[in-house]
Image (tube, rainbow, N blue to C red):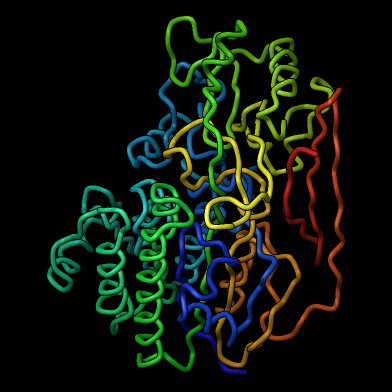
Length: 476
């Protein structure tokens, strides 16, 4: 068996596996020629910064502590909203909560073994931090497409500017960003000083899904440009010094569905007598975050208020799922079912209603949401099967090739699998994926159901090799 010395990970943010064929020829060929986990799944909530942290730690949110893209801290509810897209807000977590991320990262485990990691991140500054939150302490490198002020290792930026030219603009679709990222990956990250693990996080098609729509010419352009960048990275690996001992992982962090109806959830809560708001203001008793999922977080953990809020949610046709203590809120599913038991987790989580009805362009998956993108744009965060299904494919020396594996896999499996390939301690919540021989154990599917009055919901999970995976969930 050929030893793996280097790992290259390319992330297509927001990419649905059912949309690759006919749009992304390089990736389509890669999936067909290598090992493709067609049933790979995201975590909950299926939001980028939560997903990023699960990729970087191999842990569910209940261990790594990034429980939502935005959240308030229990016990410090009067403080500012923790917007995980902002690096300054994340750095404040160290002062307010003792740590940004509460689980060890892939970068930390690599550093402990004397191994290196380089990340090229084209999303928010917060996402770039979360992909390797201890990068400075580790002596590793992260580059943000937003430049020196948006990265914890700004010393890498002058080298990139000198080699690749000025930073690109951010017009949508992000064609210039994708082209620039390809140059950074091939001319800097995969040059002679290639790190043991190189991660390249592309911002598309997620951005174009959001703002151009899942079925649009802008999105098609973004997917083609992301595919071109991927092809350049593959060519660089194939012609590089470590070609024979490099594993390549192509993946996405979540999918998206189209938005079909916009609901002012805070306005409706207020109209029904709840003192709800998105920010700390006079008279706000309940903090709300939104999208197509979110949290309702009372300023005090008054069980009666949580009961009232849970009942109110279940009476709304726009609500698809409710997670809360079922001994308090009849009809709720327990937060533990979706790994939301961190001390930072809210006592009440909701998911907006969605289904698999064909949306624009006949692409299945539409849902209600509370804001964040134009109506008709793409959204994610919930448990719709098309939000949860991710791309995950491995190409490595002597590994399985030309196979589609339908066993469940998840973002939490990526870090343990990489560490195992490099002969290092595994750690994390996930399992080492079967890259060389198929597993003999069959997955066991379970469906959790809960109801109250006309409200009925279900969550489908799958279990294999001692690990459980979130398949899909919604209102019945």
